[in-house]
Length: 495
Picture 1 (cartoon, rainbow, N blue to C red):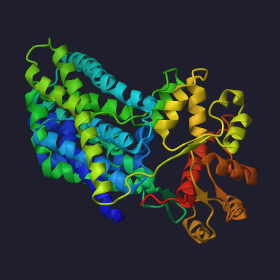
Picture 2 (picture 1 turned 120 degrees about the vertical axis):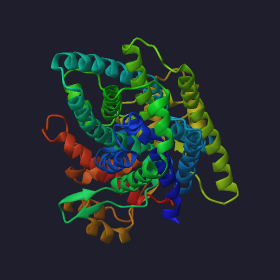
Picture 3 (picture 1 turned 180 degrees about the vertical axis):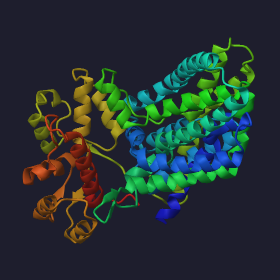
Picture 4 (picture 1 turned 180 degrees about the horizontal axis):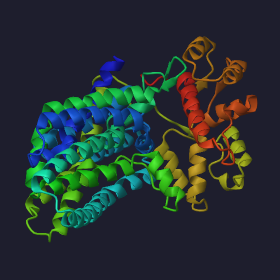
């Protein structure tokens, strides 16, 4: 049953491969520099590598948009996005998978009464404007550089053709890797909160996380979509919008690949931040928007003539309608799955300003006298809690966010029967297991409550400060260990 519910994510992955592979090799195939089958093989291999090796970077922001907490809910959300993409692909439109999954998640939030994280939504929507513009600017700069280089190098046409073909293969492979790293969050991101898999320790050499297993399956589904159905959209991108030469085709793929990788790689973001660039969010951006922006950038660099505005308008209309259609399909489908097929599509999350929560807020320095209007109250959904918080005008946005995150009710039971499993999986250290064993049989109502208790029992549960050289790697691994513990001991199961 669990694996059957994953099928909609695989369908969405197949749809992404069928639609977005055009953004990587559409221009190369359209200009007849590469055969479709060669392009498909390169794209398939590097999409899977990108998904497994660097796919987790962009999935965090998408996860914050909506924490879909049951497998039937994740199944329905992914199915709604996949149906939307499939419909658009039938119309030969290179639409955005990101927009489809975002619309579908918002549909789930509306149905379940959960709050849409507008901070995350704003970051994602902003990229829908930034992404094509940035891709267009990079394409213009690359076009100017290539033009200058070719004028000075005076390469023979036959040699230039051969170099361009090799360049298209290399850049296409990079583009496919970036596509997998950035867009796998769209395919499997909704399943990360309800993943049926566990981390796998491979002979104490490295750990394959449950998320990486999910992303591997998603990557294979994308590859299947590339082979079986991507050639139709490739024709639209490669030929219809603007006539490209082989060299400009190379520039287009390179520009869109750079943009996708920029928004997927933690290392690139950290490197840019260290030299003074502002920290930007890692989010799944649309490869469709990036490639169309790059093609328009080339067109502008060449004087703006011959742009087929009718095709551009058709593509843009697909971008506007995609999230709306996905949202509606998701909402309606959730109703049917819950009421016709009797499946739990969401686990209701309640919020409480209990004495325990107020004490915690006091401990972190929150002025608790500001809570007098809601002290002791309980709210059945996040949406109702948010409406009441909005009435408290004397609270700042940061204070409301702190109250909201602290008061969310969860449910953990440290089940003694699970310790054999913990010891066999080698995810936790001996001291961490020892501290967990000491609270065996106890229950906790909040994530922070369990975390605080563990920190008092062992220093190996405490995050390191920046004064430690290895703090980044240590903290990243520790947060994964916390997620493992939460997932294992949470009372309600997502499937």
